Figure 1 (tube, helix red, strand yellow):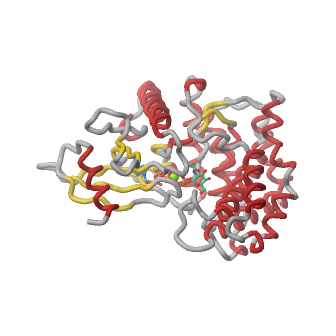
Figure 2 (cartoon, rainbow, N blue to C red; figure 1 turned 90 degrees about the horizontal axis):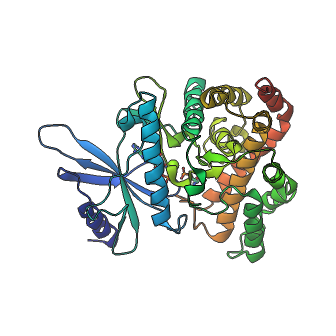
Figure 3 (cartoon, protein in one colour; figure 1 turned 60 degrees about the vertical axis):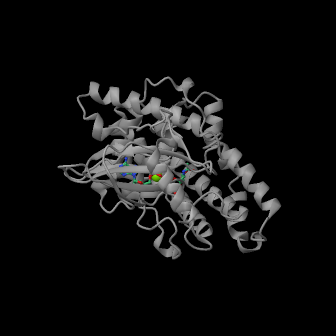
Length: 370
Ligand code: ADP
Ligand code: GN1
Ligand code: MG
């Protein structure tokens, strides 16, 4: 047996599935963790599925702290959902502990693994094929924000320090350009210049936070469309997943990352940039839905800064893809050479588009200002 298969078997043996395991295969399109779906066959009933994940060691240095956050946040959410007469087994994630009673399982190679029930009857979308779908994701992410409004933020570990600290991302990018480990700088001069000419932008949200104009909240910080499971029957957002980065943050991060990923009609790694365009109508659809979800809780300044959230999350993500490309693709999973550079280029095309449509974006959010 090859090592990877041996490790998987070891990990499957570490959890109690209450039924024979009939298979475990790679699953989903996440860029960070290694995700598997596990099929089990209980007696006298249909197959029962689980999501098994090896947490990324490149992204998460302290799986113990990460899992403490996730267990506490999922339990908090389950209680809130019950208070609102929701179904906690479908609307909240639930961590299943390994047989040894720890929060997660560490395999003999040092990998850290966790298990969740598979949330059945849901669909995970990779693109906002219809405005209704995008709106449903906006309501779900807005509601998620609302559900966590009384969560004690100071008890959360920072699972990835400086995650949306765009100034820090810029500094790390400059260091990667300077090091030019793989001699790739020569292939991406226009992209490097694109970042350098927007250096000041990287401080806009952080300045507003430092000056007390924007409040810190508990945010998800990774609000891609494929991090919300939609109810197969109703099309509404059912369960927010990928809680690795739930940390104190700005509401702009959650709004902005959804716009970055969803308010266009192209894949994140699209190589034909003529297909990569901001869809202003989808921006409007998402704005309305997200604000419906947060239910009047945002300040006027937070609403006013929403276009900046979109631009900064897109710029920052492009900077991160480019930094990873220059560093040798150690962070984001890639399936082909140059994929991180392609991802970076699509993000920068979207940033340029947001700049071109800036006054329209401001007009849209201004309708909701107080
Ligand atoms: P990554 O951090 O790598 O993006 P995710 O936690 O988002 O990992 O999981 C990857 C994919 O696995 C998701 O996009 C989704 O398709 C699927 N997934 C994760 N958790 C569940 C779950 N509890 N039920 C059903 N599908 C899930
Ligand atoms: C990663 O984990 P996933 O695939 O949902 C990344 C996000 C990026 C995104 C870009 C923990 O999201 O920050 O915006 O890729 N997550 C982490 O697609 O770094
Ligand atoms: Mg994900």
